[in-house]
Length: 311
Image (cartoon, rainbow, N blue to C red; front, side, top):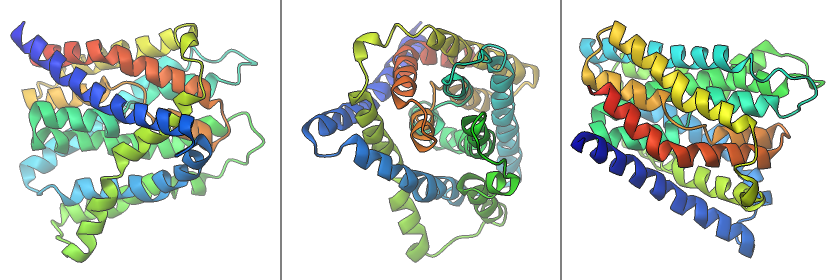
């Protein structure tokens, strides 16, 4: 019981910290200091500059050993598996013809808030080791998100399917740059490494500010009235993490690796749901409501999943 309450406090504190930044973005939009229009213009900055620096930086800041390499490979495999499980679970529920928000529901059910929620939470619960393992979730999120996610958001539109464009994107290219640096234990000079770290530090606050401006344009009193979001919540916060817990137990993974994988799998819907919706002209109001609702509920579900992983 003490462990559960401790995890509850850690997760809740992290969520509240994030929502202070969201509230800042909300207020900035209302007073015209940092508006939704400006936030939309910042989407490309997040996509093409900040996110790649986060991915490359996660590789540069981890020392390679045979043991860490093996554990990291397992974490990557589990992260990809969690996303594929999400795709399989979400697809049957959101195929109703005529509902143009289906891509948003699917995206929110499949992709978790790994970079903005899971990584800070893993650091609080497990320390640097947790961040290392959870960075695998960032790799899976961006590799699949910038391929399947892009295709999902463009599906049904008059957009030519371009496999080259889906593969050669910032997320995948960043992995192709960072992975060799990690495997070869390359140490970049501070002249290069420090700018990468500084830009990476923009990741969470900028994303939260952008999210806050989108929330500012939604009717918060209707946040609980969207029926599809309850299906998204059931898949994202319960089904996927519980299935992955079973996988981790079957593989007899050690406690730290299991907990890190669970934190990644149980993270609420990704803020990328809102940013992808903005980039591909989907309804950012619906996306914002789903992400906000999932994030609030995760204050309770995340500690439960962490406690289960440590039994």
